[in-house]
Image 1 (tube, rainbow, N blue to C red):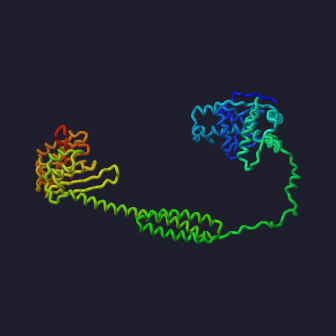
Image 2 (image 1 turned 180 degrees about the vertical axis):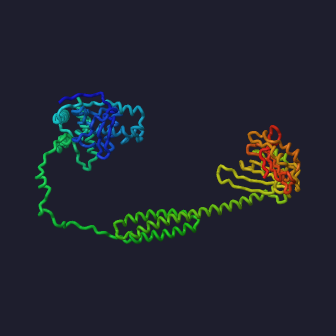
Length: 555
């Protein structure tokens, strides 16, 4: 037999093209498909116990040797694993993410989750691989000679035969023969494990193990070595398998047929209890304010019904258990609807209470005999964010209307709206102030107001002097470019009377003042050639101190 030692192969080389058969639990191919990891005469992968395969990877990370590996070179130039199949399979399974290890911090890590340094340490680990060429018989004999040589060396060093654990440990390391006495430490560890796991108090020594189990290593050796398939005499085997008629018992006297027992409590009582409780929980969930409690209990009835059905599966009386399971689900859904109804009812009742409370609190700021005393200049001088409620009350008194609202969100302040309305008007002359509470004090948040536009006279019997041409000539601007629109002053000059006017102003939260003027010209009996309806809206430009047309309508 010819052998060649290879040192150029690494773990990464062997894992190229690695294929693992999950069904059979063995590695199939590696080395880009040139390596058959599990030949037919090899045993299946047995490291898949969560411990030894992890130990192989940890050995690579720590730089420990993993022992010799033997390949057989076939006639077609491919390779088969003679020894090392389990280690190679552990490499491939870990690199392909089939199992994980614990890092130094105790965290579970797959190969892809390891740091790049550790991944490269694994992949670039060099391997000692013997390539064997020869007949299968020669290869097996060589492998056997290696094992026997190690056993003889162990006996020379330790004065006894190896235990089965020591033999298997040496096989994992490729039967490497150390120059000193490495087996002493292993032996001590094995003995310590035996003492810890033993349920007897009798002391076990290395010599007693060797005496009581003198052939354990040899037995393990024989199990590891490939065995030739024995020749079978089919006629004799058939004779062994076919028993004589006289040997077949007609009846087994020890066989007792299984008798199905019906449990009255499980099959009848429990389902009835579930049905009664379910009906009760549904009624209570629809009638009591805390109906959600009974919905929670109804859910547990489903679990109880499932348990009851499982216990009744082998019984002949399981109809009630099935009915109780179906009904328990219906009871749960019905009680859930009842709990929802009670929740909505609670919210609506409390909303009415909140509104009532808010109205009572707001009434403190209402004066039913209020006389309107606001001017446009007074409104423009309002300071949003600084003006307090008390200052407004001191200057203008209580309002015509008031509305209080609680904040439903923790980060939202309570609000108070005051409306000062001019008497004997159509409602277009008013001032509305919104206050928010800050540090226990109501401060002006925003304000809006409308006044009559005094530069245009309102008349009840308005007669239109608008022509279609006048209306068409009106230019409409935009908020981006107000100056494109017709000026208000030009319209007022030609049309000094209108049927309706109002001047609208708004103080924003940012402290900005916006203004607009709306004019309505409505003639119910216009002269020929005159337009019966014209509606115009002008927005104020601070830079020009002028209003410009932003909207028009003749409908």
